[in-house]
Image 1 (spheres, rainbow, N blue to C red):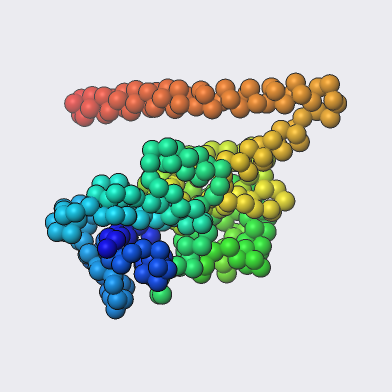
Image 2 (image 1 turned 135 degrees about the vertical axis):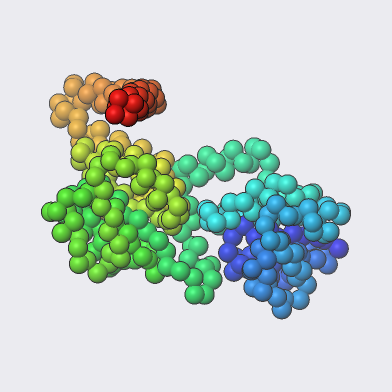
Length: 331
Protein backbone atom coordinates (compact mmCIF):
# COMPACT_ATOMS: atom_id res chain seq x y z
CA UNK A 1 0.00 0.00 0.00
CA UNK A 2 1.26 3.46 -0.95
CA UNK A 3 0.08 6.37 1.18
CA UNK A 4 -0.06 9.61 -0.82
CA UNK A 5 -0.99 13.00 0.63
CA UNK A 6 -2.24 15.90 -1.48
CA UNK A 7 -2.08 19.27 0.27
CA UNK A 8 -4.64 21.85 -0.83
CA UNK A 9 -2.20 24.48 -2.03
CA UNK A 10 -4.15 25.21 -5.22
CA UNK A 11 -7.78 25.20 -6.36
CA UNK A 12 -9.78 21.98 -5.63
CA UNK A 13 -10.16 21.29 -9.35
CA UNK A 14 -6.38 21.05 -9.75
CA UNK A 15 -6.10 18.81 -6.65
CA UNK A 16 -8.82 16.47 -7.96
CA UNK A 17 -7.06 16.18 -11.32
CA UNK A 18 -3.90 14.95 -9.60
CA UNK A 19 -5.88 12.60 -7.31
CA UNK A 20 -7.61 10.93 -10.27
CA UNK A 21 -4.28 10.62 -12.04
CA UNK A 22 -2.78 8.76 -9.04
CA UNK A 23 -5.80 6.49 -8.61
CA UNK A 24 -6.21 5.60 -12.29
CA UNK A 25 -2.68 5.56 -13.69
CA UNK A 26 -1.54 2.34 -11.99
CA UNK A 27 1.84 3.87 -11.20
CA UNK A 28 1.32 3.28 -7.47
CA UNK A 29 0.83 -0.06 -5.73
CA UNK A 30 -2.60 -0.10 -4.05
CA UNK A 31 -2.66 3.71 -3.56
CA UNK A 32 -4.37 5.27 -0.56
CA UNK A 33 -4.84 8.96 -1.32
CA UNK A 34 -5.47 11.62 1.33
CA UNK A 35 -6.37 15.26 0.75
CA UNK A 36 -5.49 17.78 3.45
CA UNK A 37 -7.84 20.69 2.82
CA UNK A 38 -9.71 23.61 4.27
CA UNK A 39 -12.86 22.70 6.19
CA UNK A 40 -15.06 24.80 3.89
CA UNK A 41 -13.81 22.97 0.77
CA UNK A 42 -14.27 19.38 1.96
CA UNK A 43 -17.46 18.89 -0.08
CA UNK A 44 -15.45 19.44 -3.27
CA UNK A 45 -13.63 16.12 -2.68
CA UNK A 46 -16.58 13.95 -1.65
CA UNK A 47 -17.86 11.02 -3.69
CA UNK A 48 -14.50 9.81 -5.07
CA UNK A 49 -13.62 6.20 -4.27
CA UNK A 50 -10.21 5.74 -2.68
CA UNK A 51 -9.93 9.37 -1.60
CA UNK A 52 -9.88 10.28 2.11
CA UNK A 53 -10.50 13.90 3.09
CA UNK A 54 -8.66 15.41 6.09
CA UNK A 55 -10.36 18.79 6.75
CA UNK A 56 -8.75 21.52 8.84
CA UNK A 57 -10.16 24.78 10.16
CA UNK A 58 -6.72 26.35 9.65
CA UNK A 59 -3.23 25.08 8.71
CA UNK A 60 -2.03 25.58 12.29
CA UNK A 61 -4.38 22.78 13.47
CA UNK A 62 -2.63 20.07 11.47
CA UNK A 63 -1.26 18.38 14.62
CA UNK A 64 -4.84 17.55 15.68
CA UNK A 65 -5.34 15.20 12.70
CA UNK A 66 -4.48 11.60 13.76
CA UNK A 67 -3.47 10.54 10.24
CA UNK A 68 -0.75 13.21 10.21
CA UNK A 69 0.74 12.15 13.54
CA UNK A 70 1.16 8.45 12.72
CA UNK A 71 3.30 6.79 10.08
CA UNK A 72 4.82 9.22 7.59
CA UNK A 73 3.34 9.28 4.11
CA UNK A 74 5.22 7.68 1.27
CA UNK A 75 4.72 10.75 -0.91
CA UNK A 76 3.25 14.21 -0.47
CA UNK A 77 2.33 16.67 -3.22
CA UNK A 78 2.06 20.46 -2.96
CA UNK A 79 1.20 22.93 -5.72
CA UNK A 80 3.14 26.15 -6.21
CA UNK A 81 1.07 27.85 -8.89
CA UNK A 82 1.21 31.40 -7.53
CA UNK A 83 -2.28 31.42 -5.96
CA UNK A 84 -1.67 33.65 -2.94
CA UNK A 85 -4.71 32.59 -0.93
CA UNK A 86 -2.95 29.25 -0.29
CA UNK A 87 0.28 30.74 1.13
CA UNK A 88 -0.24 29.37 4.65
CA UNK A 89 -1.00 25.91 3.25
CA UNK A 90 2.21 26.03 1.21
CA UNK A 91 4.22 26.65 4.37
CA UNK A 92 2.43 23.69 5.94
CA UNK A 93 3.69 21.42 3.15
CA UNK A 94 7.26 21.79 4.50
CA UNK A 95 6.23 20.45 7.94
CA UNK A 96 4.32 17.32 6.93
CA UNK A 97 6.08 13.99 7.55
CA UNK A 98 6.62 12.30 4.19
CA UNK A 99 9.37 10.14 2.74
CA UNK A 100 9.31 12.27 -0.42
CA UNK A 101 7.67 15.62 -1.08
CA UNK A 102 7.01 16.73 -4.65
CA UNK A 103 6.11 20.17 -5.97
CA UNK A 104 3.93 20.78 -9.04
CA UNK A 105 4.45 24.30 -10.35
CA UNK A 106 1.46 24.39 -12.69
CA UNK A 107 3.36 24.77 -15.98
CA UNK A 108 4.25 21.11 -16.47
CA UNK A 109 7.18 21.20 -14.07
CA UNK A 110 7.31 18.72 -11.17
CA UNK A 111 10.29 18.22 -8.87
CA UNK A 112 11.18 16.69 -5.54
CA UNK A 113 11.46 19.27 -2.78
CA UNK A 114 15.09 19.70 -1.71
CA UNK A 115 17.01 22.85 -0.91
CA UNK A 116 18.86 22.62 -4.25
CA UNK A 117 15.60 22.17 -6.16
CA UNK A 118 14.11 25.10 -4.26
CA UNK A 119 16.95 27.38 -5.41
CA UNK A 120 16.60 26.15 -9.00
CA UNK A 121 12.86 26.79 -8.89
CA UNK A 122 13.41 30.32 -7.54
CA UNK A 123 15.81 31.07 -10.39
CA UNK A 124 13.35 29.57 -12.87
CA UNK A 125 10.58 31.86 -11.59
CA UNK A 126 12.82 34.90 -12.01
CA UNK A 127 13.19 34.04 -15.69
CA UNK A 128 9.64 32.86 -16.41
CA UNK A 129 6.23 34.33 -15.47
CA UNK A 130 3.73 32.50 -13.27
CA UNK A 131 1.36 30.01 -14.95
CA UNK A 132 -1.61 31.61 -16.67
CA UNK A 133 -3.92 28.58 -16.54
CA UNK A 134 -5.27 29.15 -13.02
CA UNK A 135 -8.57 30.48 -14.40
CA UNK A 136 -9.14 27.09 -16.11
CA UNK A 137 -9.08 25.48 -12.66
CA UNK A 138 -11.23 28.08 -10.91
CA UNK A 139 -14.30 26.96 -9.01
CA UNK A 140 -17.72 27.59 -10.63
CA UNK A 141 -19.20 30.91 -9.56
CA UNK A 142 -15.86 32.34 -8.52
CA UNK A 143 -15.61 36.11 -8.36
CA UNK A 144 -14.06 37.83 -11.41
CA UNK A 145 -10.34 38.36 -11.73
CA UNK A 146 -9.41 41.64 -10.08
CA UNK A 147 -7.08 43.57 -12.38
CA UNK A 148 -5.41 46.83 -11.34
CA UNK A 149 -4.32 49.20 -14.11
CA UNK A 150 -1.50 51.53 -13.05
CA UNK A 151 -1.61 54.68 -15.14
CA UNK A 152 2.12 54.99 -15.77
CA UNK A 153 1.76 56.49 -19.25
CA UNK A 154 -0.40 59.06 -20.97
CA UNK A 155 -4.12 58.17 -21.41
CA UNK A 156 -3.85 57.23 -25.13
CA UNK A 157 -1.48 54.37 -24.24
CA UNK A 158 -3.84 53.10 -21.54
CA UNK A 159 -6.91 53.30 -23.78
CA UNK A 160 -5.09 51.48 -26.57
CA UNK A 161 -4.13 48.72 -24.13
CA UNK A 162 -7.77 48.38 -23.04
CA UNK A 163 -8.82 48.10 -26.66
CA UNK A 164 -6.31 45.31 -27.26
CA UNK A 165 -7.38 43.48 -24.13
CA UNK A 166 -10.97 43.65 -25.35
CA UNK A 167 -10.02 42.20 -28.73
CA UNK A 168 -7.68 39.54 -27.31
CA UNK A 169 -8.55 38.88 -23.65
CA UNK A 170 -5.77 37.67 -21.38
CA UNK A 171 -7.88 37.34 -18.23
CA UNK A 172 -10.98 35.38 -17.32
CA UNK A 173 -14.01 37.57 -16.61
CA UNK A 174 -11.84 40.55 -15.58
CA UNK A 175 -12.87 43.43 -13.34
CA UNK A 176 -10.63 46.42 -14.12
CA UNK A 177 -9.70 49.07 -11.55
CA UNK A 178 -7.75 52.13 -12.72
CA UNK A 179 -5.26 53.90 -10.45
CA UNK A 180 -4.57 57.24 -12.15
CA UNK A 181 -3.43 60.79 -11.50
CA UNK A 182 -6.07 63.10 -10.11
CA UNK A 183 -6.04 65.61 -12.94
CA UNK A 184 -9.28 66.64 -14.69
CA UNK A 185 -7.96 65.98 -18.19
CA UNK A 186 -6.76 62.50 -17.18
CA UNK A 187 -9.82 61.44 -15.16
CA UNK A 188 -12.20 62.71 -17.87
CA UNK A 189 -10.30 60.72 -20.52
CA UNK A 190 -11.18 57.47 -18.71
CA UNK A 191 -14.61 58.35 -17.32
CA UNK A 192 -17.35 56.46 -19.12
CA UNK A 193 -15.10 53.70 -20.47
CA UNK A 194 -17.22 50.52 -20.26
CA UNK A 195 -14.24 48.31 -19.39
CA UNK A 196 -13.39 50.23 -16.22
CA UNK A 197 -15.43 49.32 -13.14
CA UNK A 198 -13.61 51.64 -10.71
CA UNK A 199 -11.37 54.70 -11.02
CA UNK A 200 -9.09 55.51 -8.07
CA UNK A 201 -7.42 58.93 -8.49
CA UNK A 202 -4.31 59.89 -6.54
CA UNK A 203 -2.18 62.99 -5.97
CA UNK A 204 1.29 61.70 -6.87
CA UNK A 205 3.15 60.91 -3.60
CA UNK A 206 0.48 62.35 -1.28
CA UNK A 207 -1.05 59.60 0.91
CA UNK A 208 1.16 57.03 -0.81
CA UNK A 209 1.33 54.82 2.31
CA UNK A 210 -2.45 54.80 2.61
CA UNK A 211 -2.81 53.89 -1.06
CA UNK A 212 -0.21 51.16 -0.66
CA UNK A 213 -2.01 49.56 2.29
CA UNK A 214 -5.42 49.83 0.61
CA UNK A 215 -4.31 48.33 -2.69
CA UNK A 216 -2.33 45.51 -1.07
CA UNK A 217 -5.41 44.47 0.93
CA UNK A 218 -7.29 43.92 -2.35
CA UNK A 219 -4.90 41.08 -3.37
CA UNK A 220 -5.23 41.85 -7.07
CA UNK A 221 -4.84 38.91 -9.44
CA UNK A 222 -2.80 41.04 -11.82
CA UNK A 223 -1.50 44.56 -12.30
CA UNK A 224 -1.04 46.27 -15.66
CA UNK A 225 1.98 48.56 -15.94
CA UNK A 226 3.13 50.77 -18.83
CA UNK A 227 6.83 51.11 -19.60
CA UNK A 228 6.81 53.54 -22.50
CA UNK A 229 10.02 55.41 -21.71
CA UNK A 230 8.18 58.38 -20.15
CA UNK A 231 10.36 59.46 -17.18
CA UNK A 232 7.57 61.50 -15.52
CA UNK A 233 5.92 58.32 -14.20
CA UNK A 234 8.95 56.61 -12.63
CA UNK A 235 7.62 56.80 -9.05
CA UNK A 236 4.35 55.04 -9.82
CA UNK A 237 6.26 52.41 -11.81
CA UNK A 238 8.27 51.52 -8.70
CA UNK A 239 5.06 51.68 -6.68
CA UNK A 240 3.47 49.00 -8.89
CA UNK A 241 6.01 46.37 -7.81
CA UNK A 242 5.13 46.90 -4.12
CA UNK A 243 1.42 46.05 -4.47
CA UNK A 244 1.80 42.26 -4.25
CA UNK A 245 -0.19 41.48 -7.39
CA UNK A 246 0.03 37.85 -8.50
CA UNK A 247 1.24 38.83 -11.96
CA UNK A 248 2.33 42.05 -13.67
CA UNK A 249 1.46 42.62 -17.32
CA UNK A 250 3.83 45.06 -19.05
CA UNK A 251 2.84 47.21 -22.03
CA UNK A 252 5.50 49.08 -24.00
CA UNK A 253 5.15 52.14 -26.20
CA UNK A 254 4.02 49.99 -29.16
CA UNK A 255 1.23 48.41 -27.05
CA UNK A 256 3.01 45.05 -27.13
CA UNK A 257 2.71 43.23 -23.83
CA UNK A 258 4.29 40.45 -21.79
CA UNK A 259 3.96 39.12 -18.26
CA UNK A 260 6.85 40.41 -16.18
CA UNK A 261 9.90 38.22 -15.78
CA UNK A 262 13.56 39.05 -15.39
CA UNK A 263 14.63 37.89 -18.85
CA UNK A 264 12.13 39.99 -20.81
CA UNK A 265 12.59 42.98 -18.50
CA UNK A 266 16.34 42.93 -19.22
CA UNK A 267 15.56 42.63 -22.92
CA UNK A 268 13.33 45.71 -22.71
CA UNK A 269 16.02 47.56 -20.76
CA UNK A 270 18.59 46.70 -23.41
CA UNK A 271 16.21 48.00 -26.08
CA UNK A 272 15.82 51.27 -24.15
CA UNK A 273 19.59 51.67 -23.97
CA UNK A 274 19.96 51.10 -27.70
CA UNK A 275 17.32 53.73 -28.45
CA UNK A 276 18.93 56.32 -26.18
CA UNK A 277 22.45 55.56 -27.40
CA UNK A 278 24.16 57.89 -29.84
CA UNK A 279 23.97 56.59 -33.43
CA UNK A 280 27.71 57.02 -34.01
CA UNK A 281 29.48 53.64 -33.56
CA UNK A 282 32.39 55.08 -31.60
CA UNK A 283 30.16 56.78 -29.05
CA UNK A 284 27.41 54.16 -28.75
CA UNK A 285 29.26 51.74 -26.47
CA UNK A 286 30.49 54.45 -24.07
CA UNK A 287 27.02 56.02 -23.90
CA UNK A 288 25.43 52.64 -23.13
CA UNK A 289 28.01 52.09 -20.40
CA UNK A 290 27.19 55.46 -18.84
CA UNK A 291 23.48 54.60 -18.82
CA UNK A 292 24.11 51.25 -17.17
CA UNK A 293 26.42 52.80 -14.56
CA UNK A 294 23.87 55.55 -13.85
CA UNK A 295 21.08 52.98 -13.44
CA UNK A 296 23.23 50.86 -11.14
CA UNK A 297 24.14 53.83 -8.96
CA UNK A 298 20.49 54.88 -8.68
CA UNK A 299 19.46 51.38 -7.59
CA UNK A 300 22.37 51.23 -5.13
CA UNK A 301 21.60 54.61 -3.56
CA UNK A 302 17.80 54.17 -3.45
CA UNK A 303 17.68 52.54 0.05
CA UNK A 304 19.97 55.23 1.51
CA UNK A 305 17.89 58.01 -0.03
CA UNK A 306 14.76 56.44 1.43
CA UNK A 307 16.30 56.22 4.92
CA UNK A 308 17.51 59.83 4.70
CA UNK A 309 14.08 61.12 3.62
CA UNK A 310 12.45 59.09 6.40
CA UNK A 311 14.88 60.63 8.93
CA UNK A 312 14.13 64.16 7.67
CA UNK A 313 10.38 63.47 7.84
CA UNK A 314 10.65 62.22 11.44
CA UNK A 315 12.61 65.31 12.48
CA UNK A 316 10.04 67.62 10.89
CA UNK A 317 7.23 65.59 12.45
CA UNK A 318 8.76 65.77 15.95
CA UNK A 319 9.43 69.52 15.54
CA UNK A 320 5.79 70.05 14.54
CA UNK A 321 4.56 68.11 17.57
CA UNK A 322 6.82 70.10 19.92
CA UNK A 323 5.63 73.43 18.53
CA UNK A 324 2.03 72.25 18.82
CA UNK A 325 2.51 71.35 22.50
CA UNK A 326 4.19 74.68 23.22
CA UNK A 327 1.36 76.62 21.61
CA UNK A 328 -1.15 74.73 23.75
CA UNK A 329 0.86 75.51 26.91
CA UNK A 330 0.94 79.25 26.16
CA UNK A 331 -2.73 79.29 25.35
